[in-house]
Amino acid sequence: KVVLDVGCGTGILCMFAAQAGAKLVIGVDMSGMLERAKEIVAANGFDDKIVLLRGKMEEVELPVPKVDIIISEWMGYCLLYESMLDTVLWARDRYLQPDGLLFPDRAIMHLAAIEDAEYKQTKVHFWDDVYGFDMSCMKEYVLREPLVDCVDAKSVVSTRAQQLISFDLYTVTKEQLAFTAPFHLSMARPDRVHALLVWFSVDFDCRGGAQKEVSFGTGPGDKYTHWKQTVLYLPSDLDVQPGQVMTGVFGCRPNQVNPRELDLAIEYHLHSADGQNVVSSGRYGYHMA
Image 1 (cartoon, rainbow, N blue to C red):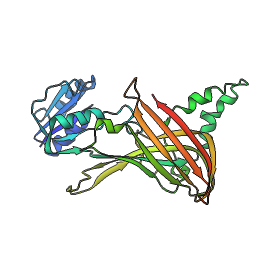
Image 2 (image 1 turned 60 degrees about the vertical axis):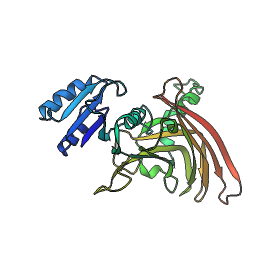
Image 3 (image 1 turned 135 degrees about the vertical axis):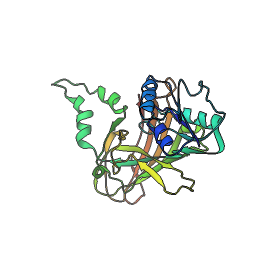
Image 4 (image 1 turned 120 degrees about the horizontal axis):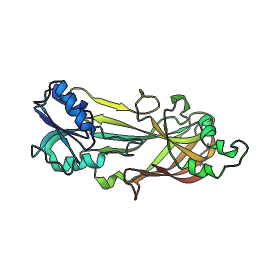
């Protein structure tokens, strides 16, 4: 097969593809890392199978009219922050054979409610008394900045993760990457909710046909990855009991000034245990820069 690696970096995925038997692998990257990738490819004896091109995917000229497979590690924090998915979709529409394959080919965003009193005290309430000075006006700005960090699975208060949205990379469009999605979180124990937690998982060959299903997740119960998880602190802490439900809407869209940054929004309603009343509601926006 002819394989295209979008944003190839050091060329590691190119070499995996060549090692697996690809006829030709084309790696594209616009950073200076491509020069090191050339050295790495040569040092490992793949000069005859791997062609590396420096430049923007949309501007370089490939040595072939179409490719059989596109591979890419395009994912960013919160899946879409600084991600290269736009570029991968462009390459799909321009170069992928009608029956070609994408790896990965499905990405899913997940949501849960967490208890995080200790870190919120350090990050947010710290501003109430900074060496004797009241700097509490800073809290509003700090709260609007999502935190990327590893969260212990024991901190999850909701019973299960909510699947927010699933992207089929064969069909999704650039416009669909700006979305709103409803959520429904049921609380598992008496506790206090300080934040909502977002992470993603990706699948390879979700359409079936592969000999082995391959996927990985970046959630609090998964093996560590550099993506960690994204913590969105709520402006007010919420006391919850088992069976209580939080419903709402999660919004995500590229920032208008810098499309590689994200604007996130949460609207939530915490219902009473009997489901008859709404005991707390909120609406909040975040900027991931």
